Image: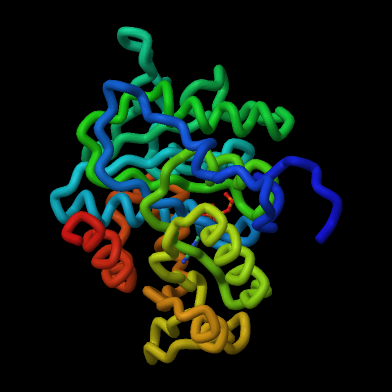
Length: 277
Ligand SMILES: Nc1ncnc2c1ncn2[C@@H]1O[C@H](COP(=O)(O)OP(=O)(O)OP(=O)(O)O)[C@@H](O)[C@H]1O
């Protein structure tokens, strides 16, 4: 056991001095009503975590649920752009109001409060974590069935603080075949275990490219090793999706709500089950 720093948040040891990590959890805004909160995590940036978060909100919105996205990826906020939102978040009675997409998905992101959405966020970790916590405590999430939290990538200080502050009902892990999948999944499992949050399953994005002529699936990043890894941790692979130029173009154009990702249906079923359990 290494020397105790008394920072239980950054330590996995279960010693006598350990404080329950749950004690860092923050209450949401008193006027908010949120039924289930799902964190979407990845090992590194660029694997499509924000895309999967957006599509989960879209799919469950299409099933008749009121969904929301809390963009906790403060230094790389891509959710408003994916939904084509360029308005600013407003205040009402001391609460921040999320912006609404065309189909009624609630979104809160640092890009909705910056003067210019192209301004870089150059804050240090504690400030970033504080902002995410405020998106939970100060934003009015009204009658939201499923709130998806686009977590900051990795397993550093900021994602850890988010894990500790927001009471998650489940976690979706997003990977891609070119990642060091074994390491990423094992880190996510450790973090989720520390916070007593169940992992709902793993979504592998960019698994293959489908030939537009013959339909053959080509694993451009090589064969995936996800099956062996999930078996080790008794997790489910909920989806494997293609690298799809049409999706890239739709997200780029702010049309996430028109995008089709039928391969995410099982992941949406799993999330939906949380309300039925
Ligand atoms: N399956 C896919 N097919 C085509 N393009 C995709 C796919 N998944 C993601 N992309 C595109 O790849 C880029 C990176 O995706 P995204 O922003 O979702 O990744 P991320 O993991 O959230 O990264 P970061 O944490 O850096 O924001 C985006 O332009 C997105 O539209």
